[in-house]
Image (cartoon, rainbow, N blue to C red):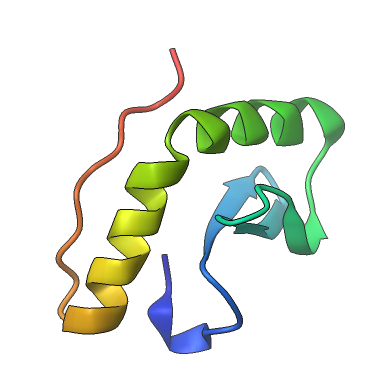
Length: 75
């Protein structure tokens, strides 16, 4: 997460040469492009951990000091 580019709560996803900003609220692409299979996995993961992502975003926006909780990868 990069809090310095506040457009809305989001995270950055990178896959090979592709990258996108993913909305935490809507769990969809805000900006960028990912291949369909990679996007499907990211959406699945973000849907599972939407609350944790929201809490991390809120913590980073309030504290600004990089404190966040690591979120498990998709298994």
